[in-house]
Image 1: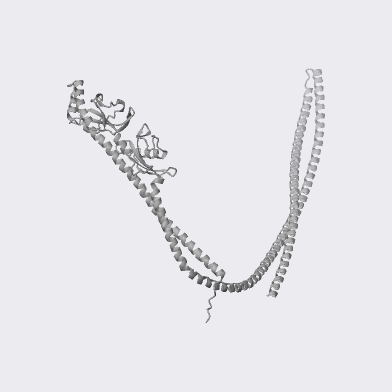
Image 2: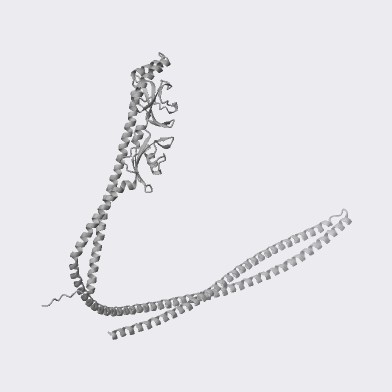
Length: 568
């Protein structure tokens, strides 16, 4: 019985090696990612622990400084509580004791207090008017007296001063009698050697750590003691931390651009601030060493695991590669079958596309025919509209002729009126002649009457006859004048009628002109309609040409379909 399993060839071995190598690399990458995901949160937590440790160191040193300052305040209050010295001061304030006696007794009592305290460097006692009366030890200038307020019963906050090149702390405390009345003030000066030892204690701060104590004077930050590297100029980040501490804030300052991590906190009951700074590299170096050791351990374990998995996967990959080759052969056979089916499907798809193209072109033919019909209907409508405009033009011309006939009648009437006016004018001439004749006779009679009057003298009866004739002539003259007036009135009426007739003729002429203009417009529209008919006819021709091209394409597609069917 023979084994039917194919032997692995060179290609199979190469594929097997690729699978093993890819698996090993993938395992190593996953191990590195897991290590990073596991170690990074741990690293962050450890950093927080180091930061908290630095903050705790600042808090611890803060308590030591506050204890020192509180001790200075307590010692100052103890100095003010000495009964015999207070009684001497009360007696001096009341004038019962002279100044020399008061100074001698007070110096003896206060010197005992000065010698008992190693830190105390000087005492100045003020009376109730805040005037210095007793001085022991280092003399304190009045300009730095920390005098408590009127309602204050405890010592003032310590103030840092420099006298003659030496640093001191000065504290002021009220001197109170049993009735809590203020009878004076003690100003006590302390050396800062112990405080300087506290500040410059660099234990637990490594090689770069340091503690800084600062106070605010006139809006500026003053460092009380020299820094670890010498000098009094803090870094920008350290100065920012001290400002926040003096403002009453506490916290941790870690600026990306700074090389230090700074924990800062205020000093209670004072205007001082404290900061503890340490170099980032030194602070986090032990942590980073531990993290790198952990990473190396994880990578080593990952390498060991990778080797074990490599040995386990090697026989499995051999079988997988052989089965993969068998599967590849089957896939190639199926791919050939699928390729032949795909070609048949492509031919069928091509046939369907050609048929679909034929349907689309037939639809275009239908749309073209519909468009031709619409163009034909449009041409018919335009022709009908042109006919209507022609009829309107004919009507307008006929009306123009009628108006012209009426104008002719009006002109005839004007001629008759003018004829009648001529007759009347002739009658006026006859009457005028008669009036002239009467006027002549009247003149003659008047002349004769004058002559007779001269001859007759007293015989004036004959003149009556002449006078009567003259009156008759006058009457006839009046009648003639009336007739003349009547004729003149008739003439006026005739003239008025002639003017009315002339005005009517003018209006009719205007109407005739307007009708002529409308006739011209009608003819222009007729011309435009003819242009539209011509343009539509051109579009119909173009549509017909497109239909012919589409029909030709349909024929070609049908021939191509037949060729495809023949090839099948």
